Image (cartoon, rainbow, N blue to C red; front, side, top):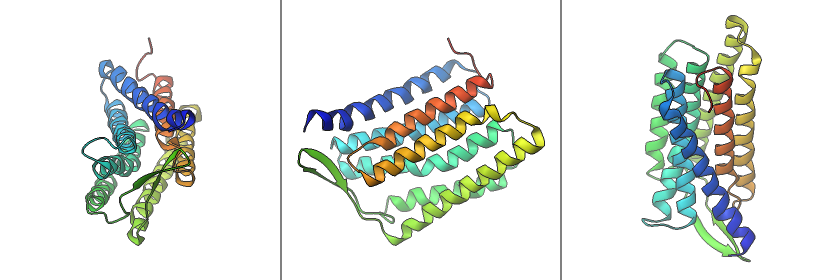
Length: 222
């Protein structure tokens, strides 16, 4: 493994994990309202995603398949927990949609444990660079559709909040930036599978959310 590959393969994911753990622990002393609890749950999903991906790439016991499924569980939980976070952050009411989206997310997580959406990644070293290869199955369209539906619901929630509650857009800007960074990290990782930019995107996104919460004075930074 080359030095650059080691840097990308180990140091960056480890930094992302440490950042998420640090943010989670700093929230333990914060006042636990619905928004902070939702953020903590999202951080746990980020940790599932990051730790699972990192340990899978390192091929730690009990093996690639186990850690891959842990990581994908975090990936599937993120859109729904984003919805929970935004509904708490914007103080939106109503639980029916949340229940439906939660059941849909749980179904995707369970089906993933039966390899319904993709094959287990195979790790290999090509020219000193560790890469993972896998194949998507046609049912993978279902979690994608669910994610799109969730983010459409989030978009409607944001528009409603800005128009009806007159929430200053500056409170939402860090959240938008965080989502963009996360999606950019996922897209780059999809194209260049050896680059752990998805886990880096998780950490940067978490920092943006943390800052958004600070601007709205959910807690004080010290």
